[in-house]
Length: 469
Image (cartoon, rainbow, N blue to C red; front, side, top):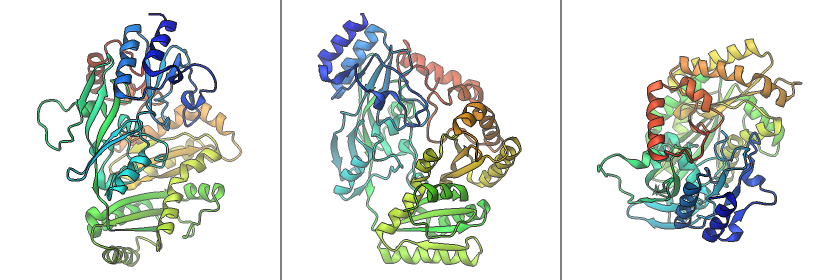
């Protein structure tokens, strides 16, 4: 089938207005970090699972590669086409429906193109909680969250996207539909196919819908910022918080001095209630009882931390608005980095107990190799995930620093991660950015198993080629 015949057939499936070949397509072709700009044969926007299946059948017949895309908020170049102009960009954003909310089963069935915030609001309208929460939740989509096994700010209590998904609907590369939307918590009937597709980054098939786990909404939430003199104190504070609050501890984020200094520079309207300190921790407790109980637990925790010398100061939010501002400080760090200029991003994880040693080793090695490099270190300390990013030294062009030193910086950081038993990709995925790194650092046995799965499910190699493997 020629390309022109394929485009005509696609228009017949999804409608002529949903096959885009002309005009400004940067919203689909340019990734969020503006590091990858591709060019597709067409942007195809199906409006149902049946249309997705028909599109994949046509592309399989024509031997044309398909790049699935959700909200295009990924950070590793996994959701944009290459520069060949020969790939179909399959946008899932028209699959927006919240199909059902089952209050008794505590589940929500939602289509892949539904924006995460919309799904959260639908759960809240039913007086339930969808705990997956990301800085990009106003534009990222459920399908993309699952395809990358997104993490976010509440992994400490509720787990990654994988732990929040009870079922999937998937279209295979040949255009077959697998309906795995049962929403069961127990189903021992063979391989759990759901887990193959979660985190597969669109390389095995297209997620079109999911059953997501919901929870009762907490009766009260308490948020605070606390100043710590060292990462060791941050880890000790985490242990204290877990001992005092247990499962009620739903957020524990750490931010170094420079990360908040960038927010202060680029977003001066956001109030920072604490004076700068080496580390600032954002804690959140969610209580099933009431606000009075939550406040008692929270204040007791912070008093014990002050008495034990783990923190030097703290600020407790006394309103929803103050709590939101505290979270805005944390969530504005990536935006402040972008305004400061391109930087070398790392999304790493190590055991929580090893984080201070990892940071000491990586900080010292980078200081020796790149004098003046500025470290933007922040992230989900509660689950061992840091965004350990390197900004160019003052006076150095960010683009030049990235181009000339990214490989050497990555080697220093990833070697330190490996030395402390960690992973060089915690929640952002592999995409195009880390594909070569994966080939070098992943176990050869693991890589062989992954390639065997890819060959079995996508033997023609048409699903998101050049990503992950």
